[in-house]
Image 1 (cartoon, rainbow, N blue to C red):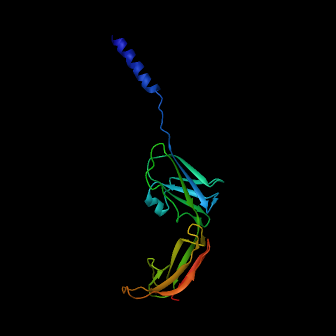
Image 2: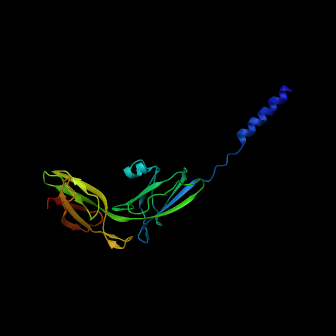
Image 3: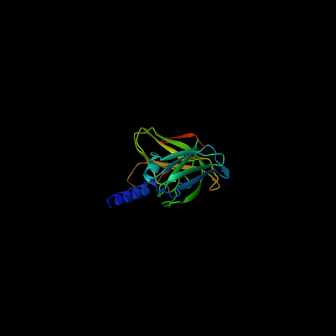
Length: 205
């Protein structure tokens, strides 16, 4: 009787070890990068699994370069929400779709499109000892440029924007920093920047 029980236990244990494990189909995320209607080849797509890392541009979990059809395919993903950044020289997707907007589900194949637009760098150079508040367009929140310093703002939208069908122009206005909200801003110039350029605005004007 004892030998029979031992034999049955061995068979049972062997069956557990030999039983095939059938994995579920992995989650796949397909991202297509476009320059207006043209597929964007050789653009680098960085994938993030947290909004914080996406905002900080650090800690990408995967990265791929797009093929001739503008696509990058990420496989074996966990069921969660994802964010991505796409860059190709001075082109980027910061002003287009950049997230799945929800957690992906098991076995899901998710496709997304994102559009690249030109970007430029703006340097606000304050040659005064006074701090200035600067707006880049009417109604936008001001940025503060401390006295005798330079504030650098990267990745601003540049050139012609095919998505909105209009040229990107900035109206630069400034005032000495104050707690008086009624004090008006003075217009100091316009910018219609080009992709990859570094534009400088000197304060005071």
